[in-house]
Length: 266
Image (cartoon, rainbow, N blue to C red):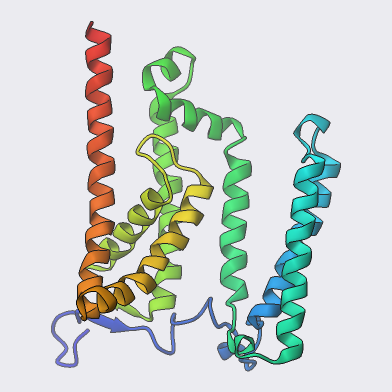
């Protein structure tokens, strides 16, 4: 509420509340370094976790689904190099040791990815995939299409809400009237930049798209400064790319639907 007692503020400051509640939990528990390791130690921890995960995967899955010798060797070399590089940075006490990693945020994201992976293999997950591909075929197969669609909408809304909470605690401010549009635009743009389509999107698309989309924030201002002498022009270019990819993807999907209808009519 505004100081006058009438109306709602356009922007709400989340300091001393939700701000950094997940990225920096130690500030509320009296230990600023809690769950915020330095980047080299975080890399070592992730490498060890991946190695343990690979071993468990090899022991639990069927022989036909196990990783091959070449894949295991490449994974071992990559993990060993990551650990060696991190140890070198720690011993040299380089400036990279000042970078703190929000470990709790990473764990929540990793847990969501793993949970979605296993959920997609359940009966409800398979039903959602079937309904998404073709409702008529799914209905003929005996799937309650409306029930599955309602469950998918509820699940997606809950996950989007948690994603919005993570977004807000990182930004630190809440836009009363436009916050819901900000996170939706960035999510759709990142997903499509990662290679997803309207009909198919995977966890890999989301992770790759997030990396590439954030890279635009770093590259675009530098490119605008080098090419045009003004970093702000690079910001316009970034917005153009983000919106353009969404528009092109939707246009390609609509064109594909038109071609499919024509082929069916013929």
